[in-house]
Image (cartoon, rainbow, N blue to C red; front, side):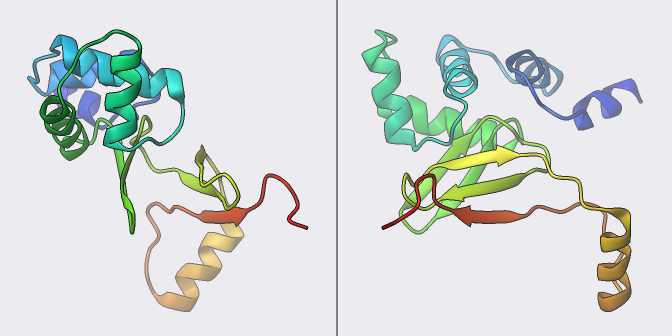
Length: 147
């Protein structure tokens, strides 16, 4: 029963991610650790190509295939987040329920934890007849005011 509780604990740090890998019996290879460390240091959503480029620029040699395979394994196990976009997939470090702020001028996606007022949740439940158990919100805006 303890194992079940540990595997549902939110992943909010590099240590949590490494612990989840161990709980799931996933080998934490050098390449996998490089990817996880980069995602937590970057604290932004990156494409597989950006991850590959950054790791190799840091002198951490890793192949394209290894990057893609590790990202697929980590995201399919819920250790990292994978966002499907029209221009490809982006990977982020937080895998528990959270919301996103989409910056329209920089094309960045920022993670934010938002808690809606209980009255609002109840109003949505009453209107839809659906019991809300979790939610995410997508915000859109500009870092700089467009001219």
